[in-house]
Amino acid sequence: MACFMRQPSFIAVALACLIGSSLRGETPDAAIAQRVAALVEQLGSDDFARREAAERQLAELGDAAWEPVSEAARSSPDLEVRFRARELLERLRKTRFGEVRRWEDHRDIVWAVAFSPDDKLLATGGGGQHQNGTWTAGSDFAIRVWEVAGGGLVKRLEGHTGAVNCLEWSADGTRLASASSDNSAILWDPATAKPLRRFAGHTAPVSSVCLTPDGTQLITGSWDASVIVWNAASGQLVRKLPNHYGRVWSVALSPDGKSAAVCGDHPYIRLWNLADGKISGELQGHEQAAVRVAFSPDGKWILSGGWDNTARLWDAAKHTLVRTFEGHTGRVEGLAWTADSRRFVTASLDQQARAWDATTGNLLHAYAGHADNLSRVAITRDSRYLATGSWDQTVRLWPMAKLP
View 1 (cartoon, rainbow, N blue to C red):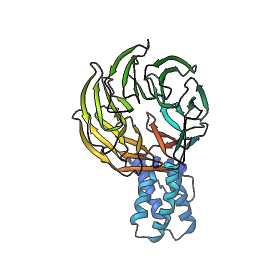
View 2 (view 1 turned 90 degrees about the vertical axis):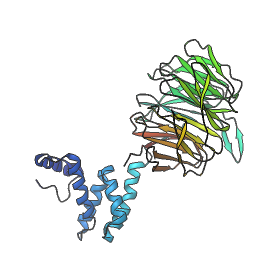
View 3 (view 1 turned 135 degrees about the horizontal axis):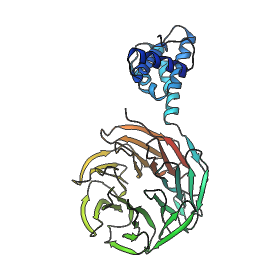
View 4 (view 1 turned 180 degrees about the vertical axis):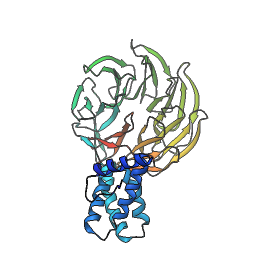
């Protein structure tokens, strides 16, 4: 069966090719690759209509056409093919990486973004404003819970009297924890938008909050230089870890919930054993303050972001530096991993988010579009999308860059 048709839709072409390839014993991927190669070659046809049809069908194809078109734009011996491939790349780039959705309801800086475990909801929070070097407290401290698919507002959670700095869902998605500059953390029932329990004990803004995998403990980090482990059900203080080097900016739990990585106003990152409250290691390598930290979902790696404009990958067991990721021109203050621990995203005060291949260190894509600094980033569990929160008071949804 011939795969070429004069001016059909791509769907019709794909179906014809897949049926034909099945009869010939070829895999669907191989059939699509052959079709893409034929369409790329057709970009250089002497027939204008054929060139236009090929470009249109390749644009409809999207991701499957990205690499062949990129290669053609770089190295095709046909000048017409190179020219059209370069133009087509711009169209494909918008489809592949363009902004999917924007939420503009916040009136202050957005400091926190977190997807629910089922990827259906996105929680966002913030507060405070910055202009010409001057900080103001702001007035918008309500947490929003959005529907990811449709973009609609599901709930507003009101109760904090200071900026919301961090949000984290429980593993089962029935609870949402928030950390605030009002010196407290709150555990919420997102279904009812009601606070279940407030955790008060810090004497300065609470910058970070985590829930253990079983949901029994809640951990907070604060600018008062302390980390507190709480009983999530009773609200009682279980353990207070000795003071950090300075203000605590970020706390991350290992996937098994047994250890915590803590960072803040210092280049060193400390690792704590939560069972006995003792230091189990220290990560040294950042040249300025390390202010964000995240364990990979498989527990093998620790990722950190710092005011030295870098992200760094560490071996979680050996406590050694594996790789430094450079390219940002501003502080790296947001980090997020894909569920397979093979990719991650960094968010920076250079107004960009960058997707990286953790294994090779290669940059997969740089996301630009925000009008001000980026503060945080989150990735859906299915690794299809990422969300960025910004000083421009918006939250944006983007397609997650894939591995080559």
